Image (cartoon, rainbow, N blue to C red; front, side, top):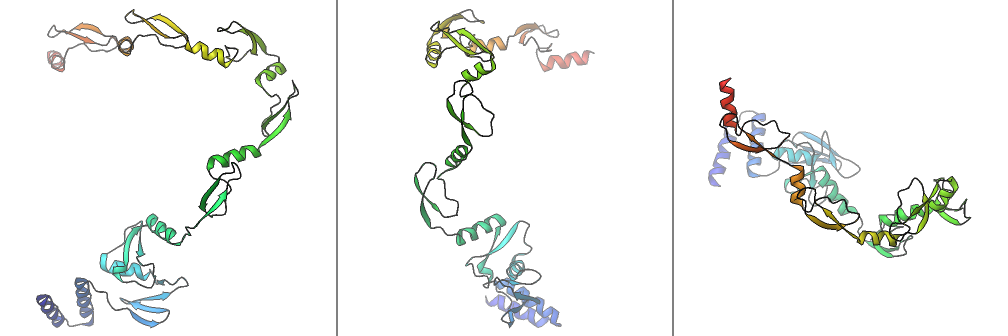
Length: 298
């Protein structure tokens, strides 16, 4: 510390002009980590490093830039794009360098939002499901979840209509031109019904001609899924058992892979070595070395 003070005294003794004196004092303050004095002109006007700052309606000292940004730039250099200077104690008049920190714009907004937003939770009742829940009062606490909100919107869009075929009252979307309560009635209305035989119970049933329905009921469909079938593997010829509706054609993954990746044997024209390759591949030589030899011969 004594050597530093002696150095400062020597520097002060070498100055000849006011500009040099100001530069030396500024350098000494940066080394010691102290701020230059802030001159108070009035309650709404201050001077820092030759720049004039005025107090705005939000309690912040501003000039060509904010005083807090000027102080940070004085000690740390230019502020990168996308960053802002935050007051640690949230006091906009405390522009001491120890009270300032550099944060990103998003982080700065989040800090102030969390400090200013009321976190008190209240109890609300969901208008869709009737469940009670706690949440921060934001003025739109009608539903406990997005699912209830969507269901409520769908309910608002529903209207009751009378089926044009059977006269039954049914509910549907008011924006759709639905005239029938079911696909069966719709088929009768458009006259495209046909009779089919259920492969499980052999019962005849009526369905839409353009539809893919094969079974008379869900129970018959489930029963068909439980039935097994014996098939022969297309690769190795081994018999295997699978569900009757399954598209499985091979007894194992290995056979499936071999069927998709069949290989054949070829003879290298350079060294005479026999190697294995895919049929679709244009490979002629067994290795890169033999390929290089063939190029040199040409």
